[in-house]
Amino acid sequence: MRKFQGKVALITGGNSGIGRATALAFAREGAKVVLAARQVERGEEVAREITDAGGDALFVRADMARASEIEALVKRTVDAYGRLDCAFNNAASVEGNFSLTADFSEEEFDRVISVNLKGVWLCMKYELQQLLRQQPSGGVIINTSSVNGLGGALRGALYSATKSGVLALTKSAAQEYAPQGVRVNALAAGGFQTPMLETVLNKVSGGKREMKDAVEAQWNRFIPLGRVGRPEEAAEVVVWLCSDAASYVTGHSMIVDGGLTTPWR
Image (cartoon, rainbow, N blue to C red; front, side, top):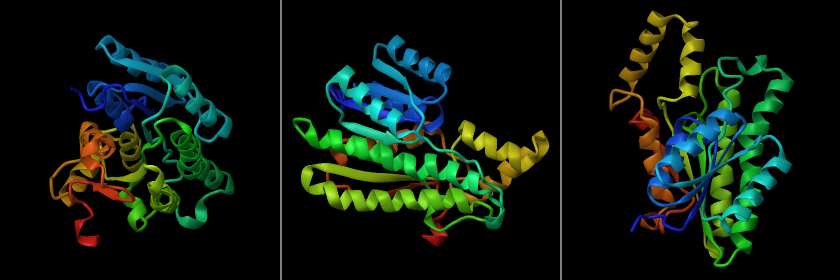
């Protein structure tokens, strides 16, 4: 029997990268999948990819900076499938990267905080309410953080601050809701082959192919495994953390970075 047969999984940022890979992985294991993002076309493509393979999936457009849309997203999930078992809060913005700490505008700060930190909290808020009121109660929440959130990053203060905040939210909620059967963990992700990473590399290299290749090669030299990760490798970690195999794991920050941060952990 597949590990998530009859279970319901909600994935934000589910239209590309790690979110897409995780949606496909949950579907492969029998879960009914709800994926959410702002970009409708790509989100609907992922949902079709799942249903064409015999799975059960639903795409819902939602902006992670808007509480009403997140509340509606959770409600739509329950209306469609009856409950919620696993939630992967994965949507994020890299706006503000490559700026010095004093150079962000207040508007930039507010936008990134709204999506990367407040958005995760809002997802948790409505997901937790549902996990506690359903019968049987309980479930699992995974929040995407970053290795940048483990200690900050040069020219990445704003992004790092939000991802550090995600770790604190995760650990706090894990302690608060463990008695009610809810586990909460974080994925502290390193570099993965995603559109987000492409955006970062293009910005660093000025869009020049040779420089982009050189930057990527230099980055790979810092990673003990010698390469950036595949989205599917992150997805397998998320699926494991949500599974019964991880039933005694909560409040954990699972670092998945090919060994990049090993010297500083």
